[in-house]
Length: 320
Image 1 (cartoon, rainbow, N blue to C red):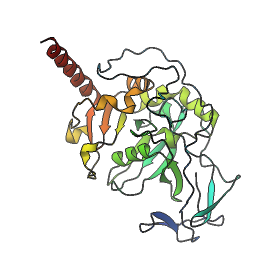
Image 2 (cartoon, rainbow, N blue to C red):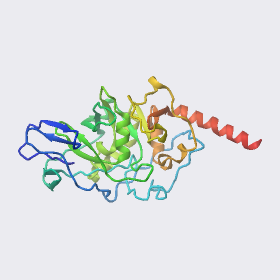
Image 3 (tube, rainbow, N blue to C red):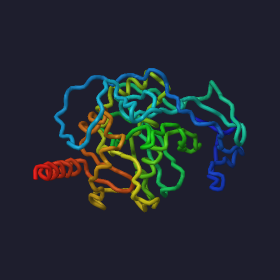
Image 4 (cartoon, helix red, strand yellow):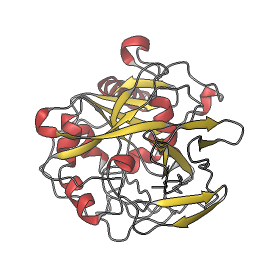
């Protein structure tokens, strides 16, 4: 976490400077421009995912996944470090304070952004409204799963289709615009899910778990099944779609408004998402699941049905 305000700033008044792509505080005069090279390193020895009971699953026959015991596929994601089984996102948990534009010093005793979690408490990310290309802003609050909070859970991969798992992107937290580094794939997912006029409550492991706290990571991985089962919907993000041609969507894909717009093709089965074994738990636990690829989407059950029909057609064709 990067806190770029001066130490004396108690009432931040932040505006975003579009010309330099950074926030500025009118109260303390600091600018949140950090030239630090994003780190691609993750905390060492993340907790393993606990063993779960078997699920009765219906998995598309055309989609294969790698089962190597550790949940990692080095053949497709060489640069990706070991990560928790639920989404594999790591962020810098320490607080940094910028002294001026392009320069910063590390403050080892700054206030912690994350409050401790226990029992079945989790954090929820409130994704604030904005246009597709706007900076990503959000608030974070703590909720208790036993009270059935309403949110959607994101299921995705840390690295994008090119294997880029570096923390190259930033989002802004709270009224102070504290900076949190995330990967490009996570940032793209948040942009695709953001509404232009109202907020959206999400659970995203990159932001909602203190990844530098090994005890919290272990605790949250232990209740991962309940996190996805309690969510009103699991949003499966496959990555960007080359057929979008760089066009920014007016609103995120939503089944009730647009229906199924994702066409089944062989390219989908090669997406990094479907090479991971841990996604089985996330989808199997879901009350409802949607697949999103760029600006297009489809309900999971429709995707499975379409894949089964496609496989049947291919089998009959091969016998002719």
